[in-house]
Amino acid sequence: MKLWRSPLAWTFLASVVLLLGVGGWLLTDPATSRSDALKTGGLAGGAIVALYALWLNDRRRRVEERRQDIERQRHELESQRAEQDRERVADERFAKAVELLGHDADQVRVGALHALAGLARSRPAYTQTVLDVLCSYLRRPSDPEDEHEKTVRLTAQRLITELLPPRDAEGPAHDLDLTGADLEYFDLSGKLVGGLLLRYASLASSTNLSGCRFRGRAYFTSAGTKDGRLVGYFRCRGTVFEDRAWFSGTKFSETADFSQTTFAGKTTFKDALFAKDAVFFDVVAADSLDLRRTSFGGQTDLRFAALPGSVSLYNTLVRLEKDVQLPEGWRLEELRDGEARVTAE
Image (cartoon, rainbow, N blue to C red; front, side):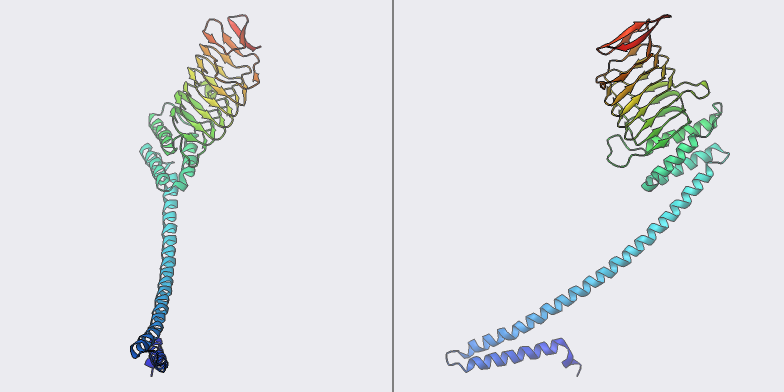
């Protein structure tokens, strides 16, 4: 009895009924031959079978779609669980590495720094957090005589550089807060940086920012004034500051080279001291430039490629015995003790 309840049985029955019905009806027509009547009846019955086949195929398709949807949901659930497990493991690795940064042994601290950098590489979402931790470590007070601690700090500086993308990258730009940090041989050359805070930082030996691109604000306010230590050799060639660049009160003890750099935002060197050579050749200052009370003690090249409509010059001093190159429209006003004031017509 169950067989006659199935769609296949009803399809077969309907097909036979159409075959006999259509064929019988056509046989009543004298103009229709028996073979044509059977052929037409067969086509009618076959149409029913074809419709059943289409229905069956559609049913199978819907069943397969439901199966695939269930499989997709199961896969998404497994992926979410796996992601949660990875996040939990990453959080545990991060917490353990941060804890080890306070270890007495320098090799353990170096290992913790590498663990943090490895976490940032495998989990890019941690990159800014890891950079914040590395910067925080460098902001800790340090003993210049402690060679073991110096090794750890140089490792932290190098890892910061490695975690930053190249200057032409289209991804996110990460911020660095190194306020008051003790840095030596700090090198960010060719990197993309968001905002940079180097207020009151000690930049010993040399600092290389050549080829960098700063998307956010860069503050070097009073850098080099910590404990009487001045900024060492400062290279900033071909760098792009897309926002504010603040060098107010910065003290440079060695050559500072800003040649071919672009300052797109407000820029100030107010109260800055250049104890030795200062190079601003082919520099573009697009927004505003403040050189009030800036002191140049060595060879000075101020031949900017472009200057804003108004430049603040007030007690901007150079040494007469040094070679001083000025942009068109600027001149020197000689003072006593071998100094001269830079003025604009």
